[in-house]
Amino acid sequence: MRLLGDLEIGVMFWAGRDPGETLREVKSLGAKCGQLGVPPELDLASSAKAWREALEHADFPLQTVFCAYEGESYTDIPTVERTVGFVPKASRKAREQRTLDASDFAEKLGIGSIATHIGCLPEDSWGEDYLVVRGMVRRVCDHAAKRRQTFALETGQESAERLLAFLHDVNRENLGINFDPANMILYGTGDPIEALGVLGQHVISVHAKDGDWPRRDVSGALGQEKPLGQGAVGIENFVKKLKRIGYRGQLNVEREASDPVQRLADIRAGVALLEKLKDA
Ligand code: MG
Image (cartoon, helix red, strand yellow):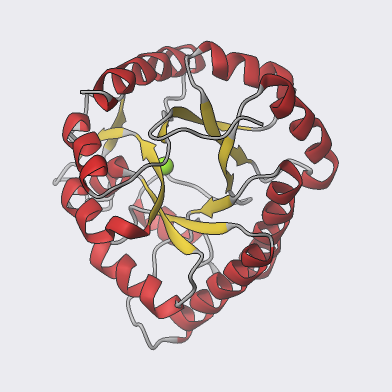
């Protein structure tokens, strides 16, 4: 498979339909590469072969396999705290296993990185919940390291400083960040351009996503996701800052609009926007 070039424009997309058909659609948007999300209902063991063959046939390199879990909901911040990632107690065992399975799936596809939202880190760094989540992340890192993979944590649910402290605390060389600038805004956790400076060398991969800050008059509300270039991120400055910190990886357009037609149109426009900005 073709090697990834510097700052190539990709798309964050999800498995679930026929792999060949999915890749044709993603390529038609102008993407040269991407990150593949694996939804919880996907049987990873039985679908790896078809995905590997389709990726080779399409000559479409992937940077990351992204893992999501059964029972997660992103309705508002309290719901995210209750349902997302490694934090909810009842699903920890199953979600850790699912992440290890995603790592095995990525290995079969020849992909060098896995990523996930681990959820809202518990406040107390000496509390049991924090220590258990730290242990889960360490075990995933060690499993991934044996497969020569990095493990990237998605940004957004805490400040850059807090995430950086967690990275140091986990203390694994293959642990890094999937930086999503819109999430910093949607969760109200800090200015994304500044956060990128704080996390700098730890950024393994990037979501190019945009959004507006949460409403102040509704407690626990998330901000609103927007088409790339139409939110509060300042995509031009974001790309400039990525270059300044020496990031050479892909720029993966992510769009979560519920209307599929709109979503594809927005991704196509996002890819075109980044093609302009990356050479500016
Ligand atoms: Mg994202």
